[in-house]
Length: 221
Image (tube, rainbow, N blue to C red):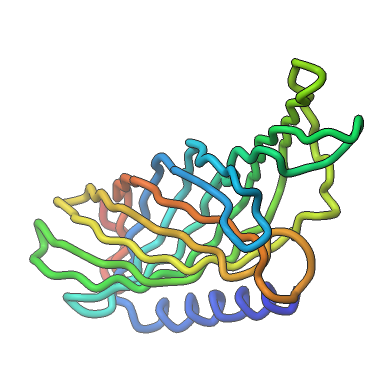
């Protein structure tokens, strides 16, 4: 909880700082597809990645011609398929599909190489993620049918987590595309001890600028 509050403080301070120094703010929509999995020392031996999606809005604060900072507000789905991971009900093992739904608030620094029309870029940043829902499907070996469980074992899941972000991409005019890697740096399950399980995501994303605010000259579409 202290880590999350500290992250919000950093993001809010960054927003105030960039608002006062940036000549323009660019607002847009973004979204894409994810390949998500769960990794760590206490994950089961058979973990299969699952496909999911993400989407949200962003505000870009250009700082120099070759750099800018982004603040985003996203929905992102994480999780994985895990076999032989939970011993429950009839003292047998189950296949588990973990679907985790987060509200994500990334703060990203972008380095660009190009011109006003086209550029290549790399992104570096952190994201504070809030778990808003979890769906867990269990498939019992001795039952032969899946069990859909909503918010089950929720006491095991941490409600907040922090991601490290890295991406490479390209922009043409108001449209951009990138490959982004998210790796959690906090535990998915349990307390604040050594990391035993964490979310891992590789995503293909698209973004489109829809609005631009220019200081001193009013609004410009």
